[in-house]
Amino acid sequence: MLASGFRARKCNADLLCSIRSVATNTNCRYLSISSPSKAQLPFFHKKLKKNKNLTATGETLNSLTPMSTPPPQPGAVAQPSSSASDTQPAVSKRQAFKSITPSPQIMHDIRVQGLGENAEMWSFDKSSRGNKTIRPWDKKLSPEEWKDLQKAKRLPPKQVWFEERTSKIVEKEQVKFPGMRFVAGATSMKSVPQEEALLKIVRPDLFDDLEEVNKLLREAQGEGNGTASIKGDSNVSEGKARLNIGADEIEKLQAKKRAKEAEIKESILQEIAIVGRSNVGKSTMLNKLTESPNTARVSSKPGLTRQLNFYRCGDKFVVVDMPGYGFAFAKEEDKSTWKELIEEYLSSRKSLRRIYVMIDARHGLKAADKEFLAMLDSKSKKFQVVLTKCDLVTPLDLARRYMVVREELNQTYRHAIAERLLMVSSYTGAGMNNLRKDMLFVCGQDILVRERERPKSTIR
Ligand SMILES: Nc1nc2c(ncn2[C@@H]2O[C@H](COP(=O)(O)OP(=O)(O)OP(=O)(O)O)[C@@H](O)[C@H]2O)c(=O)[nH]1
Ligand SMILES: [Mg+2]
Image 1 (tube, rainbow, N blue to C red):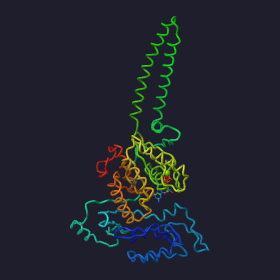
Image 2: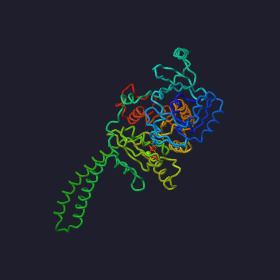
Image 3: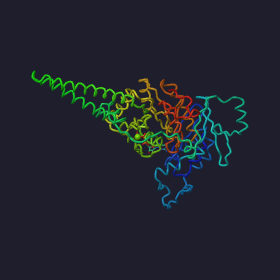
Image 4: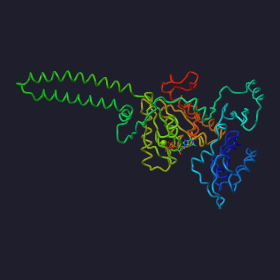
């Protein structure tokens, strides 16, 4: 079946008609459709006709017929017409994304109830007139019917809310990361001992101070020892005097060194790692989290991030943007270096508080994801899954994806924190607040999150 969000995305024939997935789950089949290709139409028609559950989509089927001139988008600049009917529209990829992004009103509340065959997804739709209608799948329920259902307690207690959002709401409710300021740096394990390199990145000034103290200490010790060893009997008293002065100095310097080391130890900030397949949207998400588009470099080509990038969030914690895994076109040696880098960091890092694994909401868990999660599981590392690019799927597809992924996590991975599967869109900002709160909470900064806003089921 097709969700209401689909209608918002049907736009024009140029932006339609590629079947992203025909997913089958227990009792329902659905199509997730986006972006254009005229050549795919016959396949599309065939699929729709073949699938019994999709017979109600006749209207949609008609709408998929290619139009010689696409209807104008609201607010779109008219393109000069071309003689060839299949000419690609002169829109940038970003514009194309925008035009297939469901409006905030369509990206609204979804409640997912129950699991597997008993799963029910409820979509709360605000119509243009502001009336609320409630739909379990394609069946419309009146508010009275909904109330009856509630009274009859046929609604399971667990409800997952996909937060209602408009840009205004997101703005108003923003939980800003305090003092998220700068790109701290990157490291590759090839060149530097990992632990030290990462710490240096967290507080370079402290390490400089310590280095200074060490240098003085070495000089003082060298002078003291050298003086004592080269002095002859005749100069013993002079040598002792120098040694005494040196010993004092050395003691002072050693005390200073201990103090610096203690300071460094204390300054080790808790870390949060962001991992996922290449191109899943890790860096974009980080930019959205920090509300600064230039924090991390982003590209539509997979494999841009190739190092561990550390972003310090004031004196609270550090977010680590990692290279993606499962990048098919990378060189074999690069792939193995990245894999090594990621695995070593994740398994040996003591200050690592939580691993957030990003999964593309359009695709769910892919083979590369499963392999990676199995690795985390085998190392007994707790991880939390976040569905990204949620603006590219219809609300009901998203809800279904949520259910399927959560079920898989629950069944297969012992260390998955599947209770609270997060969903975000870096384009609309949806779910970002939740993610921010979650991160603050995980790092013991819950004091920054108001009591009523605390994530309910986060396991710390
Ligand atoms: N529509 C949409 N596109 C997104 C979203 N997040 C990321 N993208 C796009 O996905 C592409 C990849 O984003 P990146 O943030 O570079 O992905 P990455 O996971 O850091 O990739 P690597 O560094 O190669 O591992 C870019 O073209 C982004 O514009 C999202 O929430 N919605
Ligand atoms: Mg990246």
